[in-house]
Image (tube, rainbow over all chains, first blue to last red; front, top):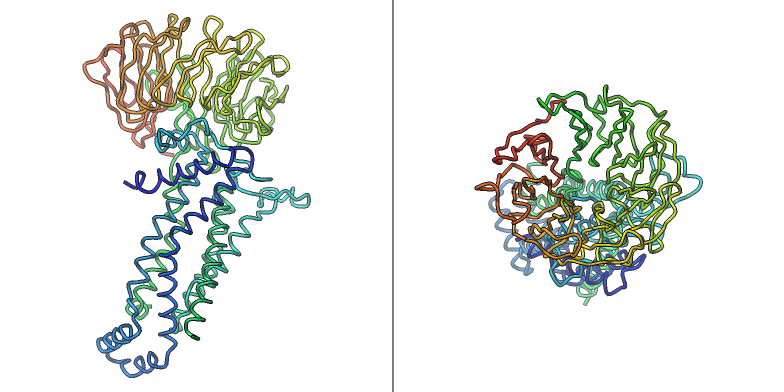
Amino acid sequence: MWNSLILKPMINALLFIYQLLGTGPNTFGWAIIIFTILVRLITLPFTFQQMKSSMIMQELQGSKKWKKIQEKHKDDRQKLSEEQMKLYKEHGYNPFSGCLPTLLNLPIILGLYQAVIRTMAVTPVQLLDLSKLIYPFTSSSLIPLNSTFFYMNLGQPERLPLPFLEGVSFLGGGLPLLAILVAVTSYFQSKVTTSTSSDQQGAGMMQMMTIYMPLIMGYFAFAFSSGVALYLVVSNILGIIQGVVMRRLRENATAG
Amino acid sequence: MLKILHKKPFFVFSLGLLLALPLLLTGCSGGIFTASSWPGVTVDGTTLYVAYGTYVYAFDVENGTELWHFPAEADRTLSFYAPPAVTAAGLVVVGGYNNLVYAIDAETGSLAGWNSPFEDAKDRIIGSPLIVDDWILVPSADGRLYAIDTETGQPVWEKPYQESEDPGPLWSSPIVDGNTIYLASLDHHVYAVELSTGEEIWRTMDLGGAISDSPALSDGLILVGTFGESLIAIDATDGNIEWSYETAGWVWSSPVVFDGVAYFGDTAGFAYAVEVETGNELWQKSIDGAIGASPAVDENGVYFVTETGSVHAADPNSGGALWPNDTILEGQLLSDPILHDGQLYLGTITPECIVYAVETDNGRAGCAISPVEQ
């Protein structure tokens, strides 16, 4: 079911874009970029809904009314819950409205990531698997893909060759530029898309995540193929743009 | 912490989701938890060599006893899948996914002969090395073929073979006839190369699909299976196409020629017998599961293995089944089966058994070699 509904359509769409672009050097990199943009556009309504909910929640938590309720019912958890629900209703906020878009978005993000990895098929097992994921009308003459993208091999971890880093073995003889970009863009994406919690402990955890997640994602980009790193950078940049636009829209709406 | 859990279910949900995402991403991609390929199996005399994962093993083929494994101590950075090749001087030559080629003493399992592993290749060694007199020919996924001196491990020549700007990966072992090497590439071409210099003699036109396994040579014809869903016969003297036979799926593995007939399978699960001289079909039949390995053939039968773990024995002339039922084994069967002394030896991807032995008379199977506790 996962293969039929998510993976196969994505892989074949990726191959279709690759074919349209002409299958030469650099083409697969551009196909990843275009495909990521298309998928992010398709999932835009879910993402906006999720971010909107998050912002409403953030505004609620910063309001005087919220703090008042917290203070008033700090010893009665049941009552506090009831009052919070009332407040949600007043502001037209559904606590699950942020959860559903996230759930809908997750398989698409996973599918997109897998589609990129599986289409590159850099090992015999992956290539044999790919034979089962291609629709009959998708030309198998496209395989294997030309994985060159400027100075990178999209099937290998990326390193920008710099003369002074040639001997630095733990870096792999070059600058991991994409991995750095992944970490930086992940950080900014977290910054613009996650809401600040009014709770001290919650805020602390959120801050911790904002620091650790970019490092984890950066490490993946450092260790895995650059095709995935390219996807992560594009996806993060689009996430940042979405976040900034959403914040502006919300600010304008509140001001108006 | 408990307070947060109670107050902010969505926050906790998001936190869990974010922390689980990297695991989901890597787990689902098969990047770090699954093997990249299947065991490479070779028999030399009474020793069976298996390259699989972090080790190269040598077993006594008669009783399944492990003779040695290389390296002696576990090294997680190593992975071997290409079938090892054995020189007349008793060196086991094996290429790794770390781009290195090792020469191992066939008696002791320790590094021998060369000062250090051959390290000129820029990408993984997926195809088996080929021993030709005093040289070893090593194909690399970097698109180059390396000729190495067997005794010293020093390079003799290296050449890229490419149609376009970037060389296509070489995933299969070359074959040699006289002074000519025939080399199949994932870039859709077959190359004929001079053995002594590595200079290209001819290359075919685009064959319509990638070629992942070695060519077969028979009566002046080079036979290759392609991802373009065909078996193609090429004139060995000039690279012109003589005939092409259409299949239902990708032809992943090399055809095996026996008595003027090419036997092979495809990823759609069909087995074929085609006359080499004319390209005419003798028979075809559907088998349960994609066929990713070359069959084993002798005068009594053609033995196909499939990705779903089936072993099928067919009559070479008619294609009729030789056993009442196919033998079904645990795990995927993607390594080329090896016929030795009335037994089929099959490398598998399963934790219970590395190599199965199947009796060709009746299809009875048993585990010949179990994984050794390291």
